[in-house]
Image (tube, rainbow, N blue to C red; front, side, top):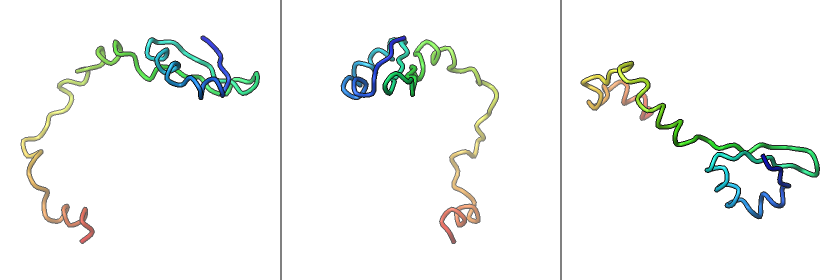
Length: 79
């Protein structure tokens, strides 16, 4: 894990983001005091493993795409 100062982080943001995509973590410091830790938002391997984990827990009702009842539609439209 590398530590970079704020100026370097601003100047090299694209490079730092590329390194995050590869799974690296980076500390941003102000002077010698760490103020933030940049971590990858999500690894693609974790995303793939989570797809479909809730399959079967929710059934889409048959009337899902039907128009809303008039009273509910009126509430949305402020009537």
